[in-house]
Image (cartoon, rainbow, N blue to C red; front, top):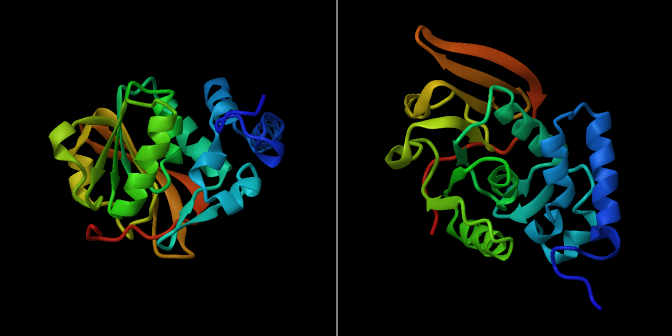
Amino acid sequence: MSASPTSGLGMTSQRSRDRMVRQLKDMGIHDARVLEVMRTTPRHLFVEEGLAHRAYDNTPLPIGYEQTISQPYIVARMTEACLQRGQPQKVLEIGTGSGYQAAVLAQLVPRVVSLERIRPLQRQAREVLNVLKLDNVSLRHVDGFGGWPEDAPYDVILLTAAPVEVPAALLDQLTLGGQLLAPVGAAGRQNLIRLVKTDQGFEKQDLGAVSFVPLLPGAIA
């Protein structure tokens, strides 16, 4: 009997995923819920077939249009951060890309709204999410600077591309007590930050240096 597309073979098999999860643990990811979703989500479906054998390496991979799928550690780290302040009910993701981060989140929160400015990437992501039957993800074709006020407010807003400064429109779409997680800064000088919305404004926490593609304006058909 042949393996299903989601189970994989060889370098895309469960053994490769288990090895990846051991690496994530060694790098400091501790949330058992996150580790289990990372273990079971078929990352090889989110990359080009020619790169599938590298899908469970802890490295970013190109997905076309000068975009990348983030390394598993970054996906796990940002997902873990989403859950650290309690269970979010609704998450806004800025930058669908391959759809991998949205797929991981969708297995841990009731609803994900994900924005992508590049239409072909959005189509590809939708196809994979459909294969995985993750119907709690709403995809929108728009650039991320204005967020998606139609479904606001959000408990978490997660950026998978780096603005030089956090767009004010996104902060307006957070619930009180909600958090925004974003890589911020110019290329080579980016830090992952957490902003928590309070009665007095925003509490800021620096979560360390990262490297992401830039957040760019304008939707591409």
